[in-house]
Image 1 (cartoon, rainbow, N blue to C red):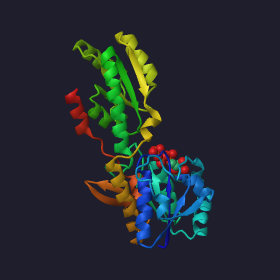
Image 2 (image 1 turned 45 degrees about the vertical axis):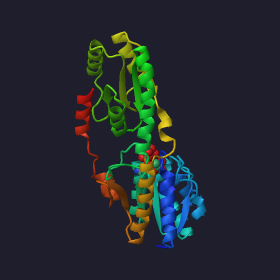
Image 3 (image 1 turned 180 degrees about the vertical axis):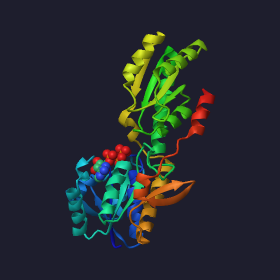
Image 4 (image 1 turned 30 degrees about the vertical axis):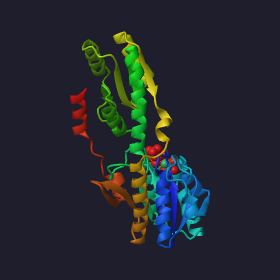
Length: 319
Ligand code: ATP
């Protein structure tokens, strides 16, 4: 391996820049050249590829977003499009590609690997929905952002005896909602893992009011229901003012926390180690504090993320 490429794909996440920096600096220290691909698989298809040097990744370790840019590019499902992408990599003499993104991006990397082009996937998403790793890059930074928002909502909800519904990102994974609800002391947690039972929720909210609770904060994962309609339902049934807050893209931005910077740096350098050892078609994770790698195809097709029943039980006890 003499030349490697790196791209960021899918939804951006704080710490992606630190991961790219990790790849670039680790590769250069091993005498390997690095090429940055702009705007994910779209830029790969359009041959927007440039050589990176040490300075290309100066002053990015503390920055949110991704300086390489990211894109959603559904056309990458088309084999001809991927063939063109591989040809572009070959024009530059690039032997392997590091893909930083979520499970959708892993699918792209898996398909390239199946076509004979070696890829390494790094988990970069705030959703923490990637199999084979306890934490994804960006997740813990986003968690702090969500908690900050919940703390603010708590202040004002309490003053006005209001019920607040907070919609948290995560796609089909409830980790960010669950952890932020525990850390933010929310009264109710609704995630894809628990499901939404409106009657049950209403009964619990009414029980809280009966107990004399001044406020109620309901944390719910995105894509489960229309939160404004849910708020109206609860307000109509309880007579208490109920408001929904959709945190949205605020959760994606901001400076990465120390944990995410270190995780991203370690994973970036590890991806280079794996490529130099001759591995391809692997995805990197951290499990029980150790860096690990799995077959990217196996991770996507067979590995499941564990449901934290212990933490759901804890949450139930504490509310
Ligand atoms: P996040 O979940 O944080 O938004 P993600 O990586 O899961 O990140 P997606 O939009 O699902 O985000 O995927 C990113 C890109 O990966 C897609 O826009 C597309 O270019 C590529 N991709 C996704 N699925 C496939 C697939 N089945 N085959 C080839 N490429 C794919």
